[in-house]
Image (tube, rainbow, N blue to C red; front, side, top):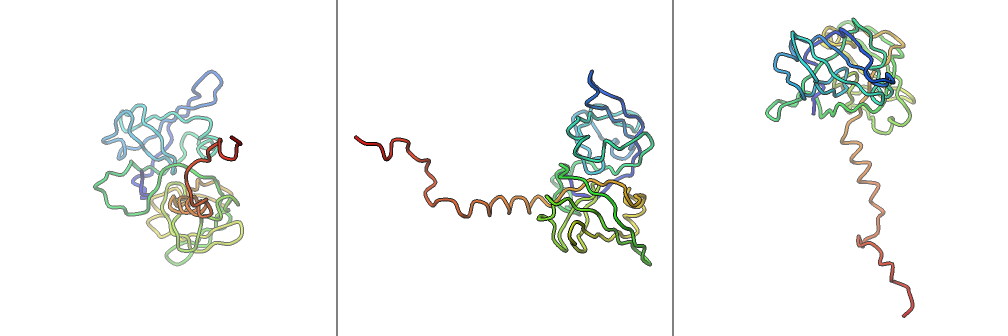
Length: 216
């Protein structure tokens, strides 16, 4: 589990095809802070995607990225030199500075518009139709691994506000109009939807007996 509070702005060092069919890649990322205590098997979120550390040495860690992850997130667009948001998995004793983030990307959007302000910037992001029902004004959303508050929701898009710290210390300060971003909606919204779906269930939870209704 993560909190969506980016610890470090890392950099992709190498992307190596892994496997005979090239369906997966091995990602090498430079991140001295997040690797300071990283061990094999630890979890590190890269642009909001939970990856498992396969090796860590000299301030760089490697992780295997499967085709499913490449297809469903923006990691497939990374290149050597790309900046990435990095966060280690949260400890039970840590403060929950953002919100509960799983590191499981629900979909991708892209930057539609950026409007600079005096001390912050307003950014509009395209929102896939199948995720729109989970996003509400003043609710939480994770964008490229950054926990953010939704300013407003419009048909097909959402708006967020970025403070100077977020602009300076994460990839969101460098994203241009048209660039893809990873989106993870609030897990609580998905659980609520699941629970509400059972509201109309039969009062008797016992499975039907196939012998009922049969003649003697």
